[in-house]
Image 1 (cartoon, rainbow over the protein chains, first blue to last red):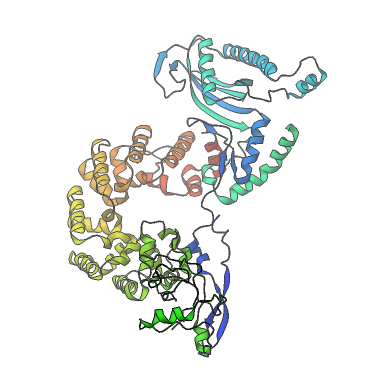
Image 2: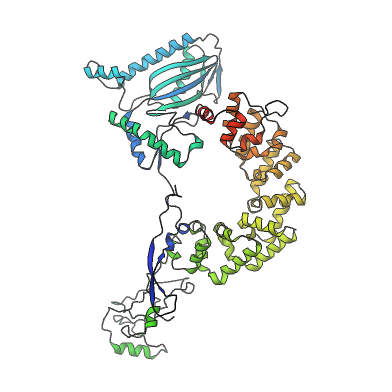
Length: 256
Length: 384
């Protein structure tokens, strides 16, 4: 960024003695040395970068950042209350103190009795109870036409702060002792998701720890738009911002 | 070049008194200490006017026409041998008019060198050489040092000396940016140190290389250099020739701190479990490992040895892996494991050598080693 943004040095008029030796002054345009890049230093010394929704150190996935003026859009996006989608990987048979596989082991259990049906039954129960909470926190009177229309489109969600809510959850794969879930949620933290895994383990009369939490989608931003660490350079960032601009604008206009 | 002091009369009793503690005799500015000004209102001490070294831009026409009784001026100046100040309305010749320079003065105190660059020839010449003043001014006292030096007298000698030692012209700029303190050194001390290095049988080209890569080298005295060379010889247990070779390749070893190097060697021996001869081999191949941080070394070794399952002797053969980023190793190893190609034992077929694992750029790694496309690699990375 500093390489393209150099301004041309200012010129100023100085009256220097003329080189021919006559007693006269010649007005010459000389660049002001104080504007020389070696004296001035780089033009951009820091950039304002603001983070979007929080992501743990132990989790990975899509992480939205705002640069410069984009920070103002971040608050708007936060107020849109869009759902995030996570892929959560878990392991049956262990329980640790912080619900992840790097914590201190608390207990070990058997897990042979777990089948896919049982898991899906538990998951359905979780989804049902969360759906009820969703309706309650979205503060819409359930008996109105407006509520019906919103529900048909699937747009009922709380528009203010609320405790973590899971809008949808399903099992992607189960290969004992490992399993993988896909969770759509609102206002959550990654630790809450790990706790859910632990609770699923308890419900199935076993125990579980969470091995991986990966965010696949954050509102309008998906994995395809995300940039890998090797792609963190000016051109790709500019292109990514350009591609996402339209999506972000339409979403903001729809909601606010 | 004589510039006439303009007779700016001080107003109502207060002569501007600006103190210039260190600058007045050093900077070759185009003004002169002002002559004594008598203030009409100071009746109390009429005989002694405050001595004022006032910085006043020389104006070609004086607007102030305050009535100062001439009598007063005459009596005051009778005692001194000074020439009475000429009135500003005198006519001067064309040449003298041309030679008067009226510029705004530079500030007395500033935190950047930008304000002084246009006024100081030393700084101008340094900028033309390529010295990055914005970085130099961040160092402690370096900016002040540069302003107080004179290009012709001091800096030129040292630049010629550096050229003799072998530093290239185009490197002088970056050299001085990293080490401006060398301009304050004594020329004889510098020459003694170069002579010492030559006595230790370092060739001229090698000395030039060492000095340009480690600009602080010539700031160390002879005893200090000697101590450091001896330290490396003893700690690593290498022969004199090998130590010299090492130092030529990484002269930063001599200028950096010694404690961390000792601790790193301890870590290598005790925690990582390398034998002494293995350490010697590793250090000879990649001296940079001595300056690496211990935490990073431990983490990289842990991953390489315990998770990838690489034995000590393989690591001795390819010590470059310690220098590369851990994340890179992790990503590539996991990709190879996913493809089923993570084979680091040379006895087995489809063996992947460690230095290829880390040193190749991404595209080559994907096509040659992993035999997959780079899009697959990126997709895999997104699933981590």
